[in-house]
Length: 292
Image 1 (cartoon, rainbow, N blue to C red):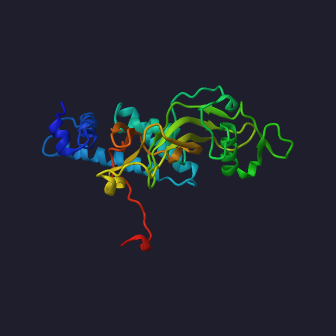
Image 2 (image 1 turned 90 degrees about the horizontal axis):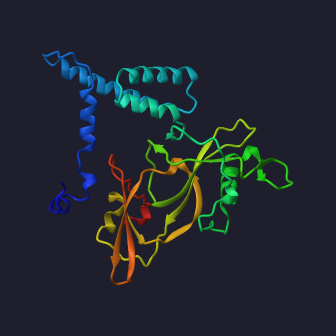
């Protein structure tokens, strides 16, 4: 039980709970030590732990141009270890590796084979210049695949037709294993795997999002000076920017959204807290001229 006094003393519960430690203890319990004494048990667990994380880091550090031999070797080691230690970190890595891309994105195990019609989507919002969802995703794909010369499906221009009912499959979630720089809270409207039929272009995962709008009228909070370190953002409730399409790799982590009434403005505020349990929030970067 988390008492009110403990929260007041130590801050948000997720910053000091012990779930991660308990999970790691469970992993170490599964290491086979054969009951050896004289420090052999501890040494065996240490070796297993170090090996697991070295493989994990090596997997994530593989460059995009790594040879097929290296990738297959890492796959073989991971799957062999996972088969011996069901439920351990190695098993999680094996699952992660099965869907990993160069953007360190893992997709759901099962993705619908049916495509979704981009023309039928309505989020009750448009892009910054009034674009619908189909147009936003088309422009986004034109930027990442300029060599395909994508064009609207009814256009007479030369190039590859971007058919709204054939290019996108909806997914429910992603798993991300790499940090970005400064964060901006967003509302995710949809996630898509985009693939252009009849081309050799690899699939790409993107997200349709709306930023929580930054407003000068939002009141100053006590934590504003350390907001980037704490990962806290303040905005008016239900106040979003226009639709935009971004790489799913740009999404870092979920956030906790806390509604707070503001008596002066008589409006409800949203306090969003970056729900990252592993690391410190990145600092904002300033030019030398901006430092006093």
